[in-house]
Image 1 (tube, helix red, strand yellow):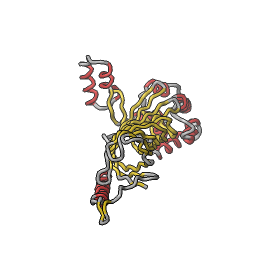
Image 2 (spheres, one colour):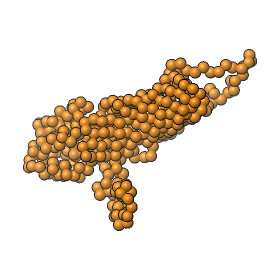
Image 3 (tube, helix red, strand yellow):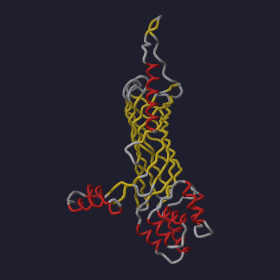
Image 4 (spheres, helix red, strand yellow):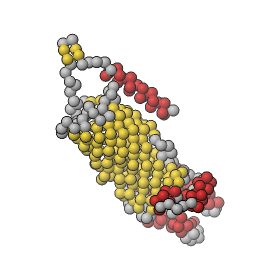
Length: 342
């Protein structure tokens, strides 16, 4: 349904641009029409984009890779550019503000943890014929699937761009600058040893919850600066009904998923359904980021204007280091937009 809407918007942009730019206005009754002046203030670039996003999380001797459930997602584009300062005929600079939203719900995990029978059988076949290098072996031991985790977020990059070309030709650009990144969700590092340590650390409900609380802060799952509400509830997890409140809080953000951990907690008789789902979510690693990335880059190839439209293929993304983890976003997008110049 959404893709049909975007397709109609593209047709509208194409029709509007053909009306505005399709006529030959190079001549007037009084003689040749003067050249169109370059914009002086800003260029707003609405359009549509097909974007693919991945998120790599590394730190504390752990790593996880989150990806989309499809090769690309069609969404709106609204970039803003400063005036273009042409240094010479083939070189120039400008300032680009690029924004994007994304949702990632598949994770790359070792095949040994996969619940897919087809993956397990293919893994055993590849193990029997594994005579290649270590890099090929490491790739063959990974599989991407839905493991009950998801991360949603957005970023805004303000990047000074140096480009080769000019506004009337193809342009190859590259730039680096700051970015604001917001991430929210959870990942599963498949840290089996830590989970078992929590589950069998001591008898009783309070002992288990105290160890689960300590695990959350020691492992860097929680950051009081980015989510003070969740940090307070987890810090007092064994007091009152805080565990149940954690369940409602995480449920309001769509972070509760029934799985074997939740079932085991529920059938133990010590936790109700909401508390069991909260424990399952806390056994994963919480992702809470709302900060400025010191480094973000973008490189792109942009087409010359045709019927008032431009096309752009770009690659890049920001890197955030926070709470002992490095969050690296990698984006690839194919965009078609109409510059509106002031």
